[in-house]
Length: 148
Image (cartoon, rainbow, N blue to C red; front, side, top):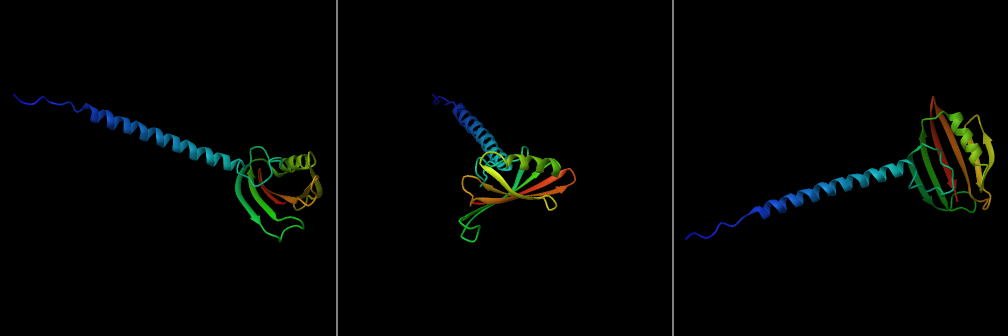
């Protein structure tokens, strides 16, 4: 009498389960990368303080944080951020002039010809910075430098 034939369907269940796990892992990894990129583009990993005004809808294009003693007197941290906005420079300028004259921020001087706004923190006057605005038609480039 021949030995009974053993079913090998468990192999197909194992292969199918591994395939489902691989697909779920790839979808999860893709979502995680997409979330990180989106968060960076909207300034989520910014070296700027959380109460610093960020222009709505602007995308972060560059960030550079430095530590040293060659910055403004009393400061040893410098944060440089660059943002792009689809709004014109006049709209962006109006936003920063209003926001940097509220809360703990105050405008020290404005150079509207060169698109520069100098500001400081009221509670710590050594914390100073500039917002530089450059218009490209209906598009604006926003440069922020903060020494703290």
